[in-house]
Length: 315
Ligand code: NAD
Ligand code: UDP
Figure 1 (cartoon, rainbow, N blue to C red):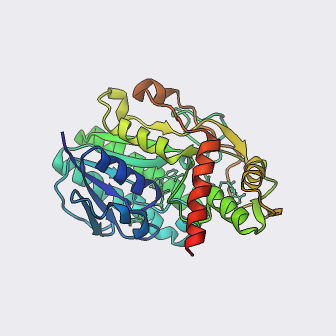
Figure 2 (figure 1 turned 30 degrees about the vertical axis):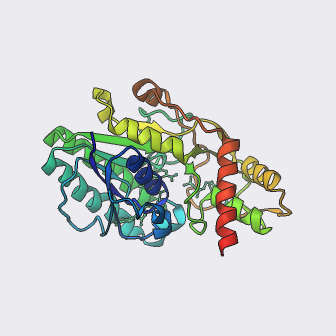
Figure 3 (figure 1 turned 90 degrees about the vertical axis):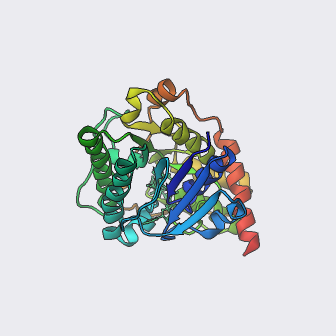
């Protein structure tokens, strides 16, 4: 049955793919975004669809819509963009979430919160499963995001316990692919764009830190499955990510190789509180949602390179 679905942050990287997928599944989609990091270009291809609507609005301000489901993605996600205005990052994670979960409560509808692997901080256990409480600095440069997202989880869980709101919490691990903003400083976009331009590839630190990269189509698939799961356990947090883990040095070397770039790899100062290792345990997502990532790293990187090449050519 056609649903009317609200996606906050719908003009961003993941949100724009989610808008498209839900429209392809014959839903009505309302994209609510203040374009802090989102781009019209990401959703321009959807504008001709009569079931797609855009609202320019800040989730920190109340708003009243009538919808059947809410995906709450509004929040800058790259360390560069969430540290640009850290107070706003906390506000969007707390006031924005209160507004959205309040809407879900008023309407009696489910809300999915885009949480993050950052709630595990610089993890001491490896891989990270949902039962791990994390190792987070509450007053460093990443805290606005990490603690903001932790508080968002708290809010959702309390609205569930106190008001019986149907909540979904997806702890998303590093996602990559087309529509990433090439200027927002994330590692996959940085390395590919640097390699395509023949610029130095900037590894922060020694490059021995690890991340586990999930292609955006797989992430979107998991979010939709989680939203629509009826299992009682679906109201508790679920990791969404690809457990194939690699070092930043391996990533840099691979990107240089497949782009056949002349770029030189250089080593720069490591950002404060940069987590050393990150890898999701996705047993719960697999069991609950019958989900696992399908896109190999090689294919995902190839599609991302094609996207960034197109972006650079257009400029
Ligand atoms: P993004 O920055 O591309 O998208 C975020 C979107 O939210 C943008 O369109 C931005 O304009 C919008 N936004 C920000 N503040 C807003 C506000 N106050 N009101 C309305 N809209 C606002 O980031 P993304 O990578 O697409 O991430 C989407 C969500 O997923 C975020 O909540 C992020 O924390 C979460 N997440 C992403 C990743 C990842 O690897 N991409 C990992 C973990 C969690
Ligand atoms: N990184 C890097 N060079 C860059 C950008 C990032 O070495 O040009 C590193 C960064 O220090 C971190 C990892 O890549 O260890 C992932 O960074 P990103 O900002 O993509 O996401 P994070 O997982 O830290 O939020």
